[in-house]
Length: 306
Image 1 (spheres, rainbow, N blue to C red):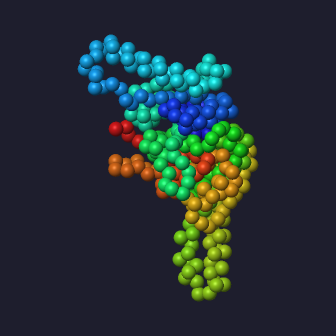
Image 2: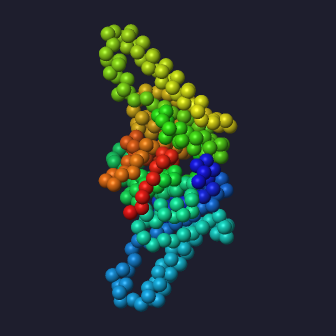
Image 3: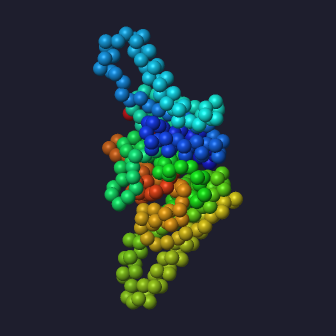
């Protein structure tokens, strides 16, 4: 599976207004990048309680009818001129939504998995919805959480980096996306304010504190520049942004200031039995940012199906 050229995109829909918006955005991306788009609907609730009263033939007919109805609903969401295209593929599955979504993503070897969310950005805690949140945490391919209202192209992309291998992978992905969409790319490195304060507070004078801050800035800038040399940014119009602060807050604020259409973030996510994390910074940004965001997983990330 190629991270850098989208050939196959999977969008999950539950026919809600949120997922219709997500589909419209994916259709825009698909048209722009000439990709195959799989539109998946999962049916979890099935009349199991009456299964023992039905013959296998009646049961199969009922299942087929539900599947056909779902396919028609998918087609009703797609513009007429695209219905005959072989690049738009409706899929209906029965089972737990997040598991079926991840299974289809693997089966079709998709490059990007997109989900809409019922979450709302604001001061209060944002709830993504159990299915969207599980997909973000457990899918092995890049996942785009759609918060935008319509597809306007990715004119401004922001990629936060922490100089790790995970953020290098995200920067490579963001650079490839910027090339494909002729986007402007902001490469943002926010070094933790909390790491700096102890050194500054230990200074014996204001002058010494200023010197310490200058040295910290110099070291961070050197590391930042060395990091960028490891990524191919040819053909990309980009700007460097380096600042001291709180990453999860500054990323969201800068995205709003620059009217970004997309954020691309790497994550140190790891899979475990009790809990699965994508990293506190990434989780906070996903929950609060106003624009679409792509989460890129570590190279060796894996999730075993239950």
